[in-house]
Image (cartoon, rainbow, N blue to C red):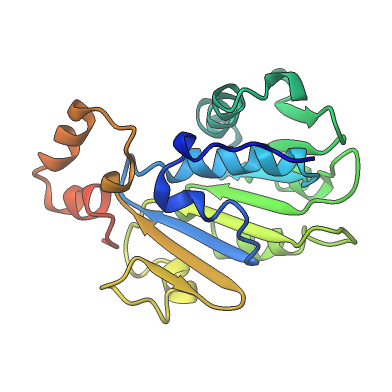
Length: 228
């Protein structure tokens, strides 16, 4: 299936990553940078291409007001509503053209995560929103969920605002990170740092609120997108 994804619906910094198949992808940076919404957009179009995605947060009850809303909004914005069956009660989205699914869960129910499987094929993708909330052991368990034969490459995508450099994510994946740059890529890892300046859909009020932040820590992390 050929999917028309007009560039005008995406922020420029993300558009070229629609087809990034790197095994581990990290999108981090400041608040209102558009990273989570872009990942939601990509999950939607990837589902129509046959990918099955498990969308996670640390606590299940936070999913509906964040990731679920982002994904359903992306379906509407991309005008793809006719291509999906959406079960709000089960928080399950199924592509009508191929049966691929978007599943949502929280890591507070570990046993449920272990048993989650799409109706057709295998999980190809895991998106962990607010990844700094999860423990390293949880991440290691999630890695093992991506198994089985598929014509699609397997991917884990993490998105978050950076918190502090002692965090396990920084210690494990930012060993070669250059603070003067906004991107890093090798065979198995890609990292992209973005801020509100990369989001052309913000209002003037949105921008002023971020630029007028006086608290040093919040300005460093949420406005500038730096590790605390």
